[in-house]
Image (cartoon, rainbow, N blue to C red):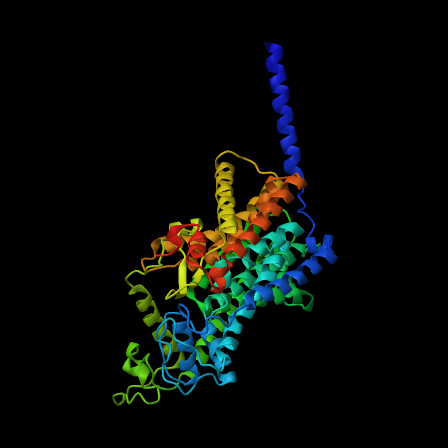
Amino acid sequence: NNNNNNNNNNNNNKQTNEKNEEINKVYNPPELASSKFKLWYWLILFILIIITIFIRIYKIEYPNETSFDEVYFATFALHYVRAEYYFDIHPPMAKLAFAFGMYLTDFNTTEPKVYDDIGTKFPDDGKYVIIRYIPTIVSILTVPIVYATCNRLHASLFGCLVASLFILLDGVFHVMTTRILTDSFLWFFQALAIYCALNLWAHEDQIKSETKYNSISEQFKAGLKEVFTFKRWKWWFWCTALGFAMGHAISVKWTGVGVFGAVGIRQLWRTFKQLKPIKSSDWLIKFVQGMIGGISIIIVAISIYYTYWVIHFVVLTGTGPGDEWMSERFLSTINGSNVTLPEGETTPSMFEKIVEVHVRMYDANSGLEGGHPYGSEWLSWPFLWRGVVFWTKFDEAPYQIQMLVGNPVSWWFSSIILALFIIYMIRIIYIETILSPKQMWFCTNVGWLLLGFAVNYLPYSRITRVCYLYHYAPCIYWNILFVPLVIEYAISNRFVRYSIYSIISIGTIIMFWFLAPYYYATDLQPDEYDNRLLLSTWVA
């Protein structure tokens, strides 16, 4: 018995020593695919872009009628062209982009409000196709950003490709971004913000200071001086680019605040972790750098957001359908409103007009009530339970339907990976006392992506207005980014890992082809239409 106890103790001590040795090691993540396989990385990216262009622009002109919310956004853009004041619950950035396209093409400026219903025919001159190209181009640019972001997260070359295919061949990301709708801009700028944030932090981690300082005040002054030197131009570039992307995200929809929150939380964590027990000589320099970087990012983002509202009001100078929402003091600045203010009362400043419209937007958002046949509950989104029918022609066979529904293979596989990682994190929290450097790196990076998913997803649990499947798109984007990271962390055998990638990729491609008639509104016989409804709940 004593011998057995001694053997057990020796084994436990050996395991403890091995664990301690592992913990003391410095973990170096896999080499970036863009460095390890430079030629293949750029060749695959080039081919991916070509395929993306073809898939996104194919049949972009069809139907030549308004589908789903094109009814609203085409009309909003026309109000800019006509300088007619209108009111909407979303910020103006994307609608200004549509309006600029309409202005350049002289798009239907003489008609009154013509887009009242889904199925309203566009003018025969085909200029509506040019306007559809605007969000489509933005959508095309999103795919290589996914690829580059996974590369920055140290995913393998195959992992980068798989994540890109998940976005490229998804019906939600395809249908929603090839119509005159604003979400394409939101999703692009969220993707760009994530990419810029990762590059900013990677650049910061490479900056080292070997100088020894005698006092905190000396290090603080050195930190200020070092931040504002020309050699930091790359750091300033990524700070500015990140602020640019986040400012545009919230300028499309307020839901863009999700990426603002996810990036902001990690930026604060990275900054204030420098205040832990001081081991490095440059801890205060890094703290100053983090604070200045965070403030700069916020200033750039808010400036962009404010600028779009200034443009909004500079363009909308005439009376229009939005007058009924605004105060008389506000309307006194609108041409043709015939509002006269009492003597001594001044008209609002630009800032006051922006504040008032935000109050009205908040009230309008809060007051939205009622349901919709294609509305869906937030808990159902990961399961792809309900689609959204954009446009139909069911008067006779063959049928034509344009439906927004995700690719079940990539969608459900991503949801499974999400569930597995949440289980792993729970195990880490409650069982693991000390993490190895590899575990710490994995949990930090994938944990941040999970945080991004959560801050975009969980707020919908408190929203009472009707929501749709496409509201989940920003959430599943974060989910898709960590799919290759989880697979490559959990499966060390390259053959098994690549086999999983191959099966999932082929399945995603086949499923996109199978559901393509829903995405492109191509002819389907009644039995073909029924056979493609993998879930009867997709349609109302």
